[in-house]
Amino acid sequence: MKVEQIYTGCLAHAAYYIESNGEVAIIDPLREVQPYIDRAKTDDAKIKYIFETHFHADFVSGHLDLQKKTGAKIVFGPTAKPSYDAIIAEDNQIFVVGDYKIKVIHTPGHTMESTTYLLIDENGKEHGIVTGDTLFIGDVGRPDLAQHIVSDLTEDKLAGYLFDSLRNKIMPLSDDLIVYPNHGAGSACGKNMSSETTDTLGNQKRTNYALRADMTKEEFIKELLTGLTAPPGYFPQNVLMNIQGYESLDDVMEKAQKPLSPLEFETAANETGAVMLDVRDQDDFAKGHIPRSIFIGLDGEFAPWVGALIADVKQPILLISPKGREEEALTRLSRIGFDNTIGYLEGGFEAWKKNAMEYDTVTAIYAMEFKKAIEEKHVPVYDVRKESEYLSEHIENANHMCLSTINNDIAEYPTDKTFYIHCQGGYRSMIASSILKARGIHNIIDVAGGFDAIKEVGTPVTDYVCPTTLI
Picture 1: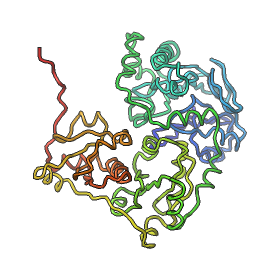
Picture 2: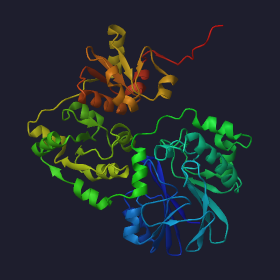
Picture 3: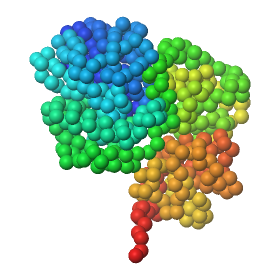
Picture 4: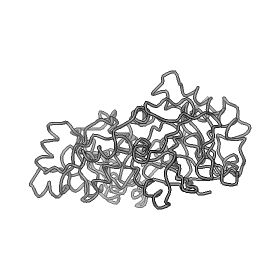
């Protein structure tokens, strides 16, 4: 059976291209749809269906643009209520794509409309399941997202639905089926996904904690909900865009691709209150950047951090990009619903400097200098990694301040004395430094290379020690 997984690493997202006898089905497409159209053209095939496993939270699907450009029919599972024309399939309904069949299996839990698609080849053999966010490799979908849209859909209630879906709909299927999930490691839609992006269902039954045969519903709910962190703020907004519809990507890009001279850029920033988003390399940002601009580099986990830290998808954005990467940045913003970029700095930061405009820098030191400084001066250290990273190992006496909550934690940083800031490799600490400086806190020294470099030079670190109760 011809099933192509199209994986996008920055979103840890998998779309699927299924072709048979001149007909194509696309499952969970990204916002930019031309690559799917081009792929079908190469196969001399026509896109017949666009299947959605659920209303996605972590990205805006490309189903509407793909329907408009190809005439393909959009298919959702039972209970879905989109605000546009779509086929709302019944449980066990079968769709024909060339010589293949795709069977609808309603698997509520991650969301109520969540659906798994069973792929059946030209010989009638069941080949695999496209599971969306119902079943990942090593994990299952978090059940706490729908309550941000429908308040009475509590995480406990959805977790119970998910338990039943897995036991009654997924686990009875054949062990040799291939599992094709919607996400891999790095996605915020689960807790502990594998870096592998496919597996057999039989192996998942043996190794995935959520598929243990002897697990009770109560045990499942407890294990699933333990350790869940708050979802990024943009998730509910993306869900609504996927339910209600959105502006065509072509129109979004046309409006956003507006080059601005340094003076025009400065005027727009002052008049609109737009976030000035600098997506260059972190070292370039440290050497020079526009005052009050925010760094989130394209060559890191760009889209998830934009969504986590800017939060409101309607926020106007002014872009500072490496030359030639403006379209890439705009596309990646649109994938998560940030459609209100109002222009970019023509000629990049170099044009800003050549125009003798004011700029700022971030003071940074290397790990060896940092080691000497904290041994001699005892300057405060702030670690902006995840809690799990900090608990695993951290610098002695370091303060933990997770980057994801920095907008709520600004008051916790000192304003009257110098402090050091670091993450694991340097990307996140530069994001944090840029946000702090934009809020008027300039007494920061960033540790280049982060915790990896700090350990390498022999800086004292400590493991987390669980407190004990004396009896």
